[in-house]
Image 1: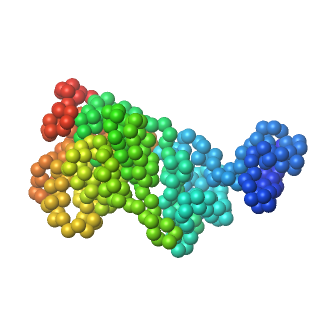
Image 2: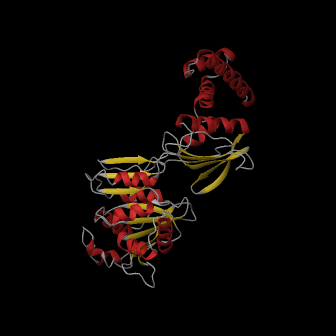
Length: 391
């Protein structure tokens, strides 16, 4: 049976399903959809019936034409750039798909995403950040901000955790495992899509079992293997503009929950000050990430974020907090082939040079080149021996 005929059958049955749903007020299940397909086209082969039913169910209950892309384990990002073809990222490469959306379909998809969350997206509220039930992150922008039509970006949640050895060579991975087990405070930095959350998951796998871990995220993505994990997620304001709970609110609350470890998915603003204070007040072993191009840039960015908190702290006091709070900065980057790789591990120097807090590189992409000078201060003591200095 030709593709055009199948599409015609699908459209006819889809209209009937919508009519039944409006009449009964109840969702139509797959069995009823299959019966309608048989009524419309009794001679359709069984395999084609199953395919038509799956597509109709996606159109009526899921994310419609995007469902096959979201079900594809090789797709890491789905991008709708207004009317036209949908783009995806596979293995770090962008490519256009055969899925083409019109404006009405995009608006319906946005409605299905934001309505269950109590959010709205329209001209008066044209930006939305949300999370799908599987943990995938969603960002949507509509006109007048999106000039060429509604835009939708879905960053897939990776179900399979990636081990540290897949991101760093054995000697560097061993150094990082020791640092986490020894309760070093670690900041992961990198660009957008560099693999910061992936690396954070891999690092957290080295936390000894039984420790109480509190995670704070803008959109919950971390999946930690520990036995005692409490996950907190920020909440945007309601349609009325009330009820927002920020990352900073959650960081402050997490400190009252007796954490052995505090993990902040990403420091973006004034919560950086609360994170540094936590690291300096007995919450060793904390982990976080930030957008930056390298270890020294990450420290400058943390300074800037603390300053946005409007607490009136002098810059020198902020730098002293940085110097004593963070032990290691790990720089991760995307490789030309689309993978993720640790590019550098740097130790934060305890004394500022010329008023700036600086870092000292202890590991590069392929090997450990020096042991952390201040490693004896952390709970686990210094690294085992100089064998780490070999690739």
